[in-house]
Image 1 (cartoon, rainbow, N blue to C red):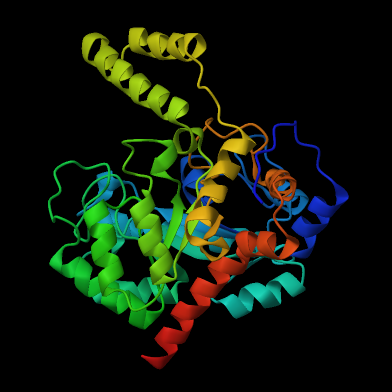
Image 2 (cartoon, rainbow, N blue to C red; image 1 turned 90 degrees about the vertical axis):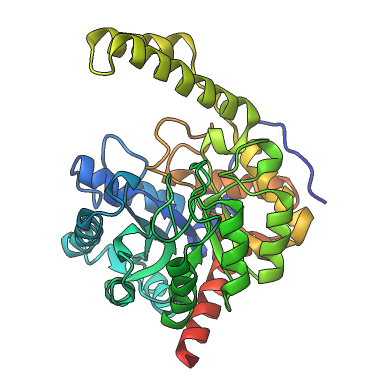
Length: 383
């Protein structure tokens, strides 16, 4: 049923219609931290970045989760909580500037209501649970501020869980507080996001959670051997049994072995050069510029991303896959034909070309994620 498309993408009216007439949830877009680094008014067209209102409307995007991203460097610091509140303020400011275009979304019902009004919903997810600070009162605080999922850890082990990037494996999975937090997130109605965590933390979170979990922006290890940040087939099968959903990350280094190997080599070469030249030296800056020119990233393609979706569908069925692009979070590493939020019709056309039905495409665009979100809402309402 699902066959690879090899022709250059030509977007049909049907693909554009599917994009414009259905809810599209992208569960991970890093607009708030982009604004922290350099303020721009995304309610209007912007010269850089991957997201703004005109491009979102063009692509049909109407429910992007705004990532409240907290760098691991702020772990175990009160500044992580301060930054989380500040980034939520930014999202509220976007809505305040253009209430005719955007609205915060705290529930599946609000997403549906705001879609009917032609508004772009901005639900919130927290990337890195560091701002919880080991205090369940902070979980309630951030729920009240709109946070509807928490990525338990980021690039290092924090007080909640081990990270897939951190080889020390401090907790051998979840910390004692992390186990308590997972249970409490279920009761409050905050989705458990297992992107970034170690394999052990993933399995422990699944064992404790009474609700389906999400991987908000992960891809598949089958295509990137040895890259633990992605999920292997056994994890995907366990996620399916849990009823959860994996939201595919678009970044080239997440979806192809070639780009992933390139990224590892670049990191090693830059680390060596920084040690030899000094990371703040003009020589190192010159090295970095020259390196990028002489060793360009081998970009993934739209087909690369579609291959990941196909793999999940073949492994555990259509009900457990969606979109978590990581727009504004992976820099200049996005695949050809998926360069910004105007490109969802390209993805839809690719799915049509591979034989996916309209109903299955709608599941990928938002239906699967909405099911999981609703299941978490229903559980919290009873507890």
